[in-house]
Image 1 (cartoon, rainbow over the protein chains, first blue to last red):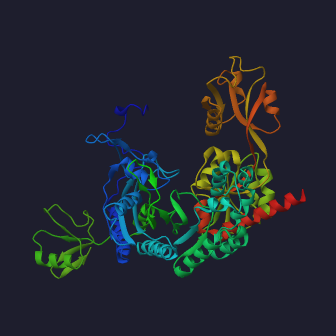
Image 2 (cartoon, chains in turn purple, blue; image 1 turned 180 degrees about the vertical axis):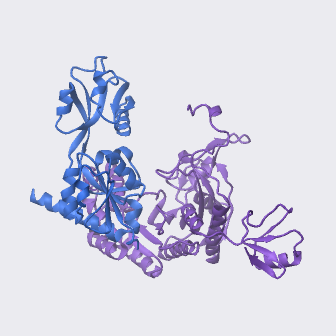
Length: 383
Length: 224
């Protein structure tokens, strides 16, 4: 079939990477989102609701490393400027913190939940629409802020039903820090070394001129042992501060999740500074979220960003968790209300949590409509 | 935490397999007898370690299985890793086996149509469309890639493409088909690969496996 001819495609085919969530998965999605939000709110993070669409420049200029290349873009018929659908909510929070809430006291705690869209799927994951829930602590990027943010992220995932949560710590600006003095690299080599470190390709790393960086590949794995290995190879003490900070964060987490360390991980850390983390859970392939410390750029009138405020935050992408929960969950109870039922009784039952399905005609049947109980004279009767 | 589920290790059919098995032995993973039985049609095999299962698939599929996390680890050439460039693959150990190179070859005496580095368009037959395109782009040539799954050497003589990009080890196959190697794209060796997320969530088992391979490769290098 010639897929370039739109008339040959079925009219109601969904584009690649987009899907409908049917009742069971939608119910799980709602509950997961609500639970995550509840945890963030409980820790003092206030929810904000930025729009789906913004000017491309404001979405792309708040964080170093975010490009608009992966965004759906189009011309605004009103202003004739380029607009884009958000592919990440974090820059929107940065914009809000830097403009309308610029005068709010710091540290400022904000959270959000909403759909984000990209023009292409991410590597092996074809999904182009994702749910993103997260929290940002603006005005602090120290150990206390990092420890709070990691702890809230873990708690949110666990509350939402994730089992066996594990957190992988990383040092996103590791190569820059080391290349500055301890293990010097030519400017042209830095990108290649960073790339080979990211794929953990020992052979490629040597070829790229990063032989001195090979031991970093070994300082990965369970946090307690890997951090000792990293400390042992710390060239000239350049990382001493970072290592002490990581140990302190780990200590404050106090066994709430399994911890691992991968100091040279860069994947997905486009704008993070000294500290980053990735969240995983049992039964979910791939990461469920990530976070870290970063700096919100403050664009000047000419659009060029200069260094702005520091911040710490996390983003969860709970879609895979939602699918896992939805598939494992038994269908919820539903109460059938026959024609002429006792309305007051039905009201009382709904008030204590029952879901009811009222008959509209004699033809309606409890079992066909997916009900588990029928309202009898003495109350709900199991089918 | 996931010790109940077996670790799936993917091995490629073909040139790397014979060299990879001794390394696997040394890492304490010995396949069951059926693995060596040519008539066996099984696709997955038990090993001397109850928590490790072997699968034998095409080289390109090794990378795909591991990148998707369907297998947690595997052995594959760096040609395949670079062709796919999957973000979810780690290649922590250069196994120093399966050495060869990825090269451009064309008929002896030129392509006949005056083709050389000067042209802005080239038609190339290969199993490696991404690496081929990238290589020619670097030289400022827009390559039209004809994807083949084997017998690339036939393409120039039958007029399918003016040149080919393929693996070369001794160069004998090229010679027998009237082709000559004109440039090398990259040197290749086999790597131990692991799934990124699996390494994070199952770091005890995969970390030990990586360490075992690393130790044996280092010992072999020291002995050589």
